[in-house]
Length: 444
Ligand SMILES: [Zn+2]
Image (spheres, rainbow, N blue to C red):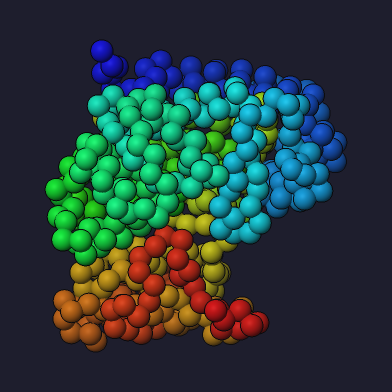
């Protein structure tokens, strides 16, 4: 019979903090020694920073090492194709190469050895199991084969059954539910509502597909209460969030059924830090801590990374949970790249979007922040924000005032909200551009 435990990996997912600390310390020292011996990129980087292997004897000493920026990896690959000087294993040991989507620039290539493939599979199994995937789960896989997410097939079939679909084949996807008995879906956060539209157009009731679980990865958003509720009601399922990082590990975070933030589940594989993005200072992991996620590989052959800055800004939501997992919980609330600074206050467009989404169905949830002049002038309040109203909006004047006062209260800046008819702005998509700049020829 299949495994029926609450956890994929009982030993590691419930480790008490002291034992996890010990495990991570041992793994870190092992990985750093390997990096020092095998990565030309880090040999050069550490020499430049004036640090030596002996400088790190404990987990707490990790902050003596410099951060790794995404741009350095990109430059390293341009200068030394295909995998860059940060490759630490011989090319003949590399068994697979994935590519990042390149949402924020030129894609980078991710090489995996046999060992790396197995480690990623272990992490993804823990993530899917945390979300509730079980041996009787049947999952259609709708993903481009070059992307990291294609690696999930290994883990999905280790737990349950995979039905390969590919991208852009809605009828084949529907068929997997209607004819093969698929009962779970892995997608981006914005996909389920698009899928529901396609079903309605075909006069198919989304509930009739028998989907019990939708796991959203690739982009945050599933934890926005209004979106979660709409997807769960539309399909009659649970909708949970997961997260990985293309450069680090396919899956590292996943929500359990208690929905209190994504648990860290990549213990022994990756070491996460949360830092103050401005000062680089390491923050204590406790409820309410807010900062940028930084990752260090603990068990990687091909491209181990040290203190890799993600630009993902997160808040720690929990350090213990009814499910018994000891991996702390987080939510993502924005990316540094999107951030604008209004009178010294950091403003994440996604946070504005979350406030407007909290007023659904009086708004559609869609927003666009309009910056008409270059900073600092263009970022002086009031900030011009377009918000879509709905048929159920009621008095528009009141809605405008309410959005403006919520923004002032929660995000501490003044906004001038312009209500626009439904369908004017791009439909809810996490990666949709939430900011439009009308200067420096940047208007798009
Ligand atoms: Zn939990």
